[in-house]
Image (cartoon, rainbow, N blue to C red):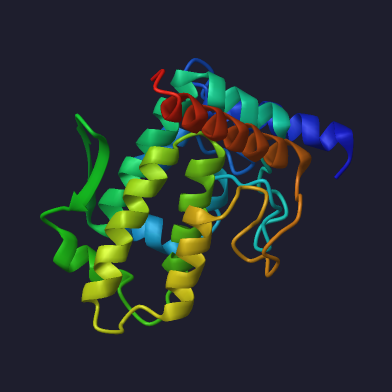
Length: 224
């Protein structure tokens, strides 16, 4: 991707999510208009999920889908307004899948909502395109700074998987697990178990590791 195109995508993605700007995507849609769609539209349209949950990897299904670069990554990690908008996207898609997002004293928690039985018929199956969407959502949340929400979603999915009596494939669960637990520089579809990937994601994971190591040392020394 050329530097000019990358810069343009960066600006368009941030302005798309910026509540003060609310710019349109390449199809002329705003974030608010997409989130206002009914469930039937969310199910039948296949080119919005790459926009509202962008990734550092190019989409295999939409060549115009935005790609997260370092500047976008840093913007989402430093701006509560962008994170709040991303959380709104998550809330809408959780409703589509039959879940609810709640804030507790221990952090975000995702539980089955009153419509779970009917909503889950759409995706609690051996394989469904929504399984790919779910993998994307988990990874996008983590990349853009909503690590706790990603973990809560994965925990809810684990419970559904365990109670689904084999209706969700092990392969889908494998990709959800990779999206939730791998270092961010490794994409879920990457068969490597190590490697540096994108520099800014590798640097971010290195900083987390160093911070965790420092925290452990402090606690062991009795200073925490």
